[in-house]
Length: 175
Image (tube, rainbow, N blue to C red):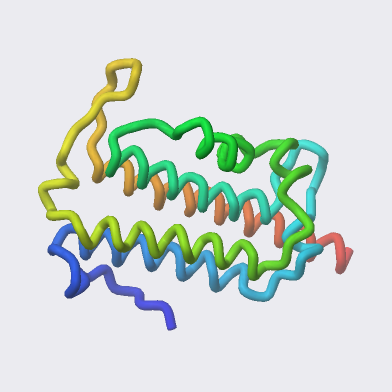
């Protein structure tokens, strides 16, 4: 059952507990909406330029992994990490062509493992960590709170794309 309250979770500091509550709510809605998708639906492309639901799910996992690395280790991806994640990070035709032919359980397991790592990371932090600042290579400042807000923002945006693809599939099948 989805909890529709943002409340600090007991095993985290107050602000981080609220952040985790929001992250988990965002993910619960996403998982609820994709829970019945077949492999064919996951791999559906509206056209040659569109993303598939499968590529969007791998993108969500890749973005979360990147945010773990940037916020905790204060670095970019290594070459080996980039090799694993560059296609789902970029999305587009290449992602839709390469990320396919796997059942929903594959994507769910990947999202679950990445989230497990995120929750462990956040459990190890104090609220003051959210305010820690760093700078992008272009000199623009950001803090850890922004990074994790952006993760939710990204997932919600891509969930909108997933909804659109699901409507297109439904309309194709009933039209």
